[in-house]
Length: 412
Image (tube, rainbow, N blue to C red; front, side):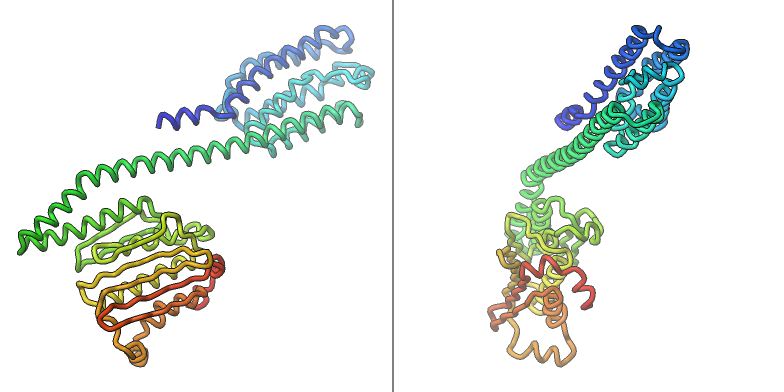
C-alpha cells in the first residue's frame, strides 16, 4: 500500500497546478508593470488603477484555489474568467483607440491565459475550448473588429489550453489504470499469501484427517472422507482465486460446499468470458478439472451455454453412473475452437438406451447438451462403452464462439 500511495502522489496534474500558481503571480506583476511604464499614454489611467486594485488582491487571495483540483471549483473558475473578461472589455474605456488599433495590450494582458489554463487543468480540453471561445469573443469586442494580432493571440491561447487539457485527460486515465493495476497486484499478492498459509496449515490438517480416518475405519473413515472432500474444495477455491461469476455449488450428498464472490452474470455482457472460471464450480472430490494455464476466452453466450452443457453432462454422471463414479473435465483451447471433454468411469450407456430415452420423452442429452451446443454453432459427441464409462466431447468453433449474441436466447 505504501508503494501505491507513492505512485499516486507522483501525479502529472499536481506540477501543473503549481506552475499555474506561479504563472498567475508573474503575469499579474507583468500586467501592472506594463501599466506603470505606459500609464501617461492612457486616457483614463484611474480606471486601470481601479482594475489593478481588484486584480492584484484577487490573484494573491485565490492562490490556494489553484493549488489543486479539489479547491478549484466551477464557481471559482467562472468568477476568475469574469475578472479577466471584464478587464479586456474595460480596456477601450481606459486606453486610447489609437493604441488599441496599434496592438496595445489589454488591461489583464497575458494574465487572462491563466484563467483559461485553469479551465484546461480542471476540466480537460472541452472546458478549455469553451473558455478560450469566450476570451476570443471579448478580444474581438474590445478591438471592435478582427485583426491579425487578435486572431493570432486568441489561437495561441486556444491551442495551448486545449493541448494541456487533452494531456491532463490522458494523464488522469493513465493514473486510473495504474491505480487499478496496483490494486490487482496487491490483491494477487494477498491471495498468494493466503494460499501459502492455507496450504501450510488447513490443507495439511485436512489431508492428515483423511489419512488417519481411512486407517482407523468405522465412523472415522466417514469423517476422513468428508475431510478429503473439503480439502479438494478448498484447493479448488484457492487455485481459482477471484472468479468473475457467482458460484454457489453445493453437493449435499458429499457435503462439499464451494462459494465465491457474487457478481451478476449479465454484467459486462460485451466482454469475453473466461470459460475456466465458469467450470471451476464443478471441481470437487469426484470431479477433476484440467484446464490451460491461460484464459479461455469466449463470447458470453457461448461461454454460458458451454458451461451449462458441462453441468448437464455431470448431472447425468451423478444420476446414472452411481455415487462412487469419478468424472474428469478436460478443457482444450485450440486455434480453431474450444473443446471440452467430460469423461467418467461409470458402467457406460447400453446400446440403444439414448434412443429409448428420447422415445420415453427424456430429452436430457438431446436438449441440455446437444441442443445447447447447436444453439451456439457447436457440436456434441457422445461415446460410451459398456463397463468403460462415457465420454462427451463438446466442441465450439472459434468463429461461432466470438459471435453468438442472441442465438441462444432466440432458440430458447
